[in-house]
Amino acid sequence: MNKNPYEVLGVARDASDADIKKAYHKLVMKYHPDKNPGDKSAEEKFKEVNNAFDILKDPQKRAAYDRFGDAAFAGGNGASAGTGNPFGAGFGGFAGGAGMDDILREAMRGFGFDGFGGFGGERGAAQQRGRDLLDTVTISLRDAYFGITHTVKFSSNVTCDKCDGHGTDDGKTAPACSRCGGSGVVHTRQGFFAVETPCPECNGLGRKISKKCSKCDGTGTVHKQRTLDVKIPAGVDDGARLRLAGQGEAGQNGAPAGDFYIDVHVAADDKFERMGDDLILRADVPFATLALGGEIEIETLDDKKLDVKIAAGTQIGSRLRVRGHGMPNARRSGSFGDLYVEITMSVPTKLTEKQKKALADFADTKSNKKSGWF
View: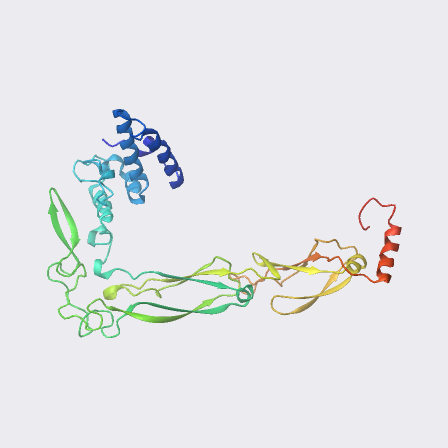
């Protein structure tokens, strides 16, 4: 009987992949035959550790064990069988508690037959949904403010225009396969249970194409260069993923197309720092203006010029809020964040004699102060 892989590795059931690997490496070094020559118990423990790791490192096998326990691997030590089947070397001797249909469904998934007939799918192998496609674009903060249309050029499978995706020479829907009755699957018996497999007559399509389309060879798709205009909305966040439904690769023989995704990265800006929908602009203000008060002119990200009041005694590092001049909110139309003007000051490196005297006189008036300007 298989031992609990979690107990063998000494990890919890919700352990992360990293924790499982760490525990495995520690134990495999401890019980390795080279470190324990002639120790049969260490050799057995080494095998147990490897078998446990073989189950838990594979998402399908781990899910099968979590669901069915030892029943998932009954009939032999399937964890290290190396067959690609998440249930091991055989299907005999299932323990009670797991339904036969559930176990068979999981087993067929392990063999790559997910989606055939009674095992959770509506189409055979020849009618698989088209692949999803992904593109990545980096835009400027200004483009993120206004929104932009990004043009993507790529190649992918598209629906054949000669047969309209049916794969037939005349462009019409092929008749139902006589062997499987249009289901795309046939039933065979292995021992005491029946298994559904793709129909060999129609390759799981459910329809029998007597004369294939000369352009797509019966697949219903052809490879073609494509151009897609993707509208990136104003206010888009860095790291956002946009989805264009049905714009991925075409599915074969009339199956639905996949989706097209685009990951958006917003580059850092030289002048503005973004914090959600708010923006931060650092403004260099003369000392006299900070001390006496006044106004400075700033330019917003959308090229507007604004006068910002500086109160007398404003400190370096202060942030003045200008409402409604931040980034547009991509989720709420017409809503904008705020712009914060962060006060900085540059110390002049060249002064006239008059300026030096004025500063010296000011310093004299503060000579009785320990520190600070005021």
